[in-house]
Structures are given as C-alpha cells and as structure tokens.
Length: 403
Length: 160
Image: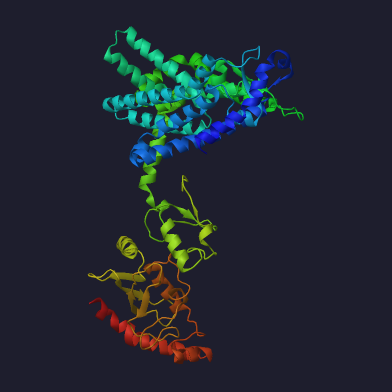
C-alpha cells in the first residue's frame, strides 16, 4: 500500500473524530470506553499496516541505494516506516487505520478530550524511537561488554553467546511493538542508571568498562524481569481494559468506542486470571529459588560461590538449589560426556559403520545416518535391519536423543 | 567413496577380530580394497566339514547399496553353487540384500548355505537332482569326494 492511499484512508476517518470533538460537551457521556477486543484488533491492524509501510520504505531505499546498504540499514528503515505511519496518523491528530477499522478514538485523561499535540508526539516517540534507541544502546553495550569479557576470560564467551541468543529469542517473542517499547523503556532506564553512575565516579573509563561488563552479565536477568513486567501489564489490560500498549499508559492516552454497540462484547477477565496464576507461580518459584535458600543457607551457598570459578555463572541456579552438590553434578556430567566419547559403538550407524551423522529413525525404530538410510530407501523401501517397509516421508531425523 | 570408507571400517574390524572367528578368514587384496579373499571352513556334520573353501569377493563401487559378488574359487559339489564357475545362488547376495550385511556376515551366510542346501533352486542340477530324488547318501558321498579332492588339498596351496 502506498503512503498516499494510507493517508487518504485516514482522511476518510476524520469525520467521526471531528464530530466527536464538536459535540464533545453533550455527547461525550454516551461514548463508552473501548473494550479489549477492539483495542487488540486495532493494534493488530496497525501492526499489519506498519509492516506494509516499512516494506515500502525498505523497497524505496533498496531501489535508491542498492541492496547492500538497504540490508545494513534494515532496522533504520523499519524505524522510518514506523515513525512515518504514526506521525501521519496519530501525530497529525487522526485515527490510525486500525483504530478507524474498529471505531475507536484516542482520548486523553478522564475528561474524554482529544489528546493534545504534545501528548500525541510523546506517544509517537514512545512507540517508535524509544524502543529503537534502547535496543541499539543495549545491544551495543552488550557487544562491548562481550569484547571486554572475551579479553578477560574466554569462558565469558559462553555467557555472552547465551545472552545474545536470548536477546534474539526475546526479540522474536516480542511481536508487538509495545512489548519492545516497554522492555526497552526499562532497559533504557538502567542504561541511564549505569551512565549516571559513571559520571559520578568522575567518568573514569574503568568504571564504564565494569558497567558494560556488568550490563552484559545482568542482561539476561533484566530481560527476564522485563518479560515479567510486560506480562503483568498485559494482565492489567485484561482486567481493566484501558491500556494495551505501555506507551499509551505512559502517555495517558485511552480509547473510547464510537461505533454502534451491537452485542455483548467478550470480556477477557478469564485470560487475565490465567496470566495472574502464571505470574504468581513464576514469582513463587523465583522466591523459593533465590530468597528462601539465601535465608536458609546463605553461608553454605556463599562458600559454594567462592569455591566455584566466577566464570561459571551459568551454574548459579544449581548452586542456589543446593550449593554443596554442584561439584558432584559437574563431575557427573563431565564423566558421562567422557563415557560417551569412550563408547562410540552405541552410536554407530550399521550401514556406514561410523558414528551416526544426523541420526534418522525408521518407523520400526532402527536408527541410521540420514544419508545412509535415505540412499538405501532409493534402492529398496525397507529397513536394512528388519526389512519392515519404509518410505522416505516416514524417515524421521532424531536429534537430542541419548542413545 | 562411501564404499571405500565402509570397506576400511570393515577391514579394521576384521583385523581387530582376527582369530576370534576361526571359521572365517577374510583377507583383503593388498593393492585393491575392492577385492577380497575369504577362506571358510566347512560346517561340522556336513560332507564339507574337513574342507577349507576359498571365496573370491568382488565389491562393487556402490557397496553397500548393492551386494558384493561372491563366488567359490575352490571346487565344491553343492546344489546352490555352480560347479564350473563357482557362482553362488543365495538370496541375500541377489534380491534380499541389505546394506546392514557385512563381508563377514556374508561369509557366515555362505557357511549356513553349505549346511542347508536348497535343492529347489539349483545351480548344480546334478546335485539338485540327487537331493530331490531323495538320494541323500549319493549327495553326501559326492560332496565328500569333491571336498577331499579340492578343499582339503587346496589348503596348503591357498595358504602358501
């Protein structure tokens, strides 16, 4: 969809919002607050259109500057598309396409007046630039911390790669912008914290380095906390049904429903309840894992901490559970790994007589290399060991199995 | 190339298990890993029990997807072995081949074939007819004679 089309669509949406503002004195009481279904549907629609605008921006950039640059500035193009969409809609005081589709209008505060330009700009900023900035800063800080860690101790690489993978997974999880926005809000705050700490210590480079490294270390737990925070926010939305996006909560912009109320709209209290149960479980788990043992056996776990090399910070959970047992577990794991290396016979493919590459199981349960058994199935569709009929689609690659 | 890798594996296995299985002795051609020689002992309680038979194994490039070609070098009087060429009629060497078989297990299958002649699909018609007509004694004495003539005498020759 082109930008002209989008804005034209938006202009058509002017009428209801204008009438609302004109007759706001007498009609305002009649408009009910928008319910969760409309808000979520509007958000989804918006995401869809934002995606289209982003794509258009990316294409335009690619045609102008070439694919190489376009790939390099992919994230910036996304930002540009997002900013463009929200500036043209929310920023200029119009409904977004999703809001128009769902007959909801943004209002600010309790009086139900249209949002002021400043508030709208703030919202656009929250929804677009802030997540991008926070993500950039955070990832750069993490990367620098990683470089530092790599210089210091090679074992840190493990942690950092774990971090980056979690970062990716978190990004993938955070489908809606509001999640990123919220998570990045927090992260940004932390960033600022660490920065101010640096300035307090006189801007010493050393302090900045430690801050960076610590950032890389605590990033996973920060992300976890943010995910919890996002979920709490979603739970609140399910219960009260006011703010779906964190940016809107921060800007204090809510929705009213201007369409004709047709039937009883579904309520999402049940979902909120489930989320609440999940969150309370998570919190309880976290409490028993960290707070309780730290009270019960703080001395013991501290002793375990000192005995374990600091690089092995991934084992923290294990230490917390029962600090004394970590050594046993560690050696066990290692010895089992050695045993695996010692006894290759158990994982041999009976066709090539070598270690199995891409273990593949037949329906009858025999395991071979993928190449071996697939080639044989070209010759004859039967299991080499038991002659049970096997077809190509029935072959299943088996990974992460200890046999 | 897969065949070469697998044959090397089998070669190593044979070297490792040397002496464990006294019935079968697998020897690889020094210069060509696709050519093997096997010496098998005739199974006990059969007319072949005193003999040691030499097999020539020719492994095709596509092995183990296709079976190896095995034939008797030593003359043998058996319904499923061609008397002149030494060709063997054994299903696992033809249609019922499976890549899970190894040269070692093929040799074992040949030994089993010596113990259990299948007169209904004869390559040696004279021998098959003897068995099918119920002349077990005739078959036994003929097989014993040829074993003594060829297999027992051929041992010093082949091992030398």
